[in-house]
Length: 110
Length: 116
Image 1 (spheres, chains in turn brown, yellow):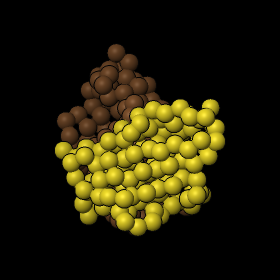
Image 2 (cartoon, one colour):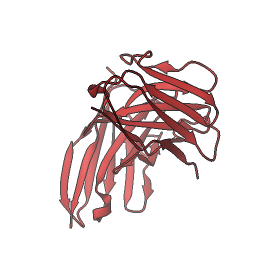
Image 3 (tube, helix red, strand yellow):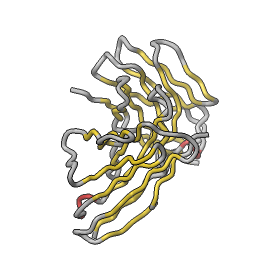
């Protein structure tokens, strides 16, 4: 079945902590895996991962894809209250459609 | 940048009425637009893919006669929820694809529909 599962479903940490969010999928033949951050409105793009083992970084955020084990992680270091959001991963088969995961709701406590 | 707008941002309607939601790409031409629905605390579910000048492609389980999609130009797609019911209350988000690479999907701000 075409599933994208994220864990944990929710996470509450203190400001300054480091968090790791997981995204696992079941189907191997896709073009890319994407991460989005969703606050109160629509998702904003974070990363696109196409190759296994190559880390993408943007400031305190980084992400990597493991095509062999069928998962991706999103790391956020030195978290800030502005990082509080729902983080979504999505799989792109290359046919224009994105299949979104269940999302992880991250809450950063000051 | 690539900006996508939606109108209205919030709408409340009575059961049985129809509601139209507009999705516009403001500074680029979008050959393909996508409509998603998101229920509270759930992920985005793709409803349909809208291509300019042709009929929309609906995902399994989405009623095409209930959710009418029109993509009349390269910058505008509309979603009309016909004979709305309370269970249609949801957050509707559109996205627009600018180029051949599908990661270049730019999301609109969403429309919160409440059917009373």
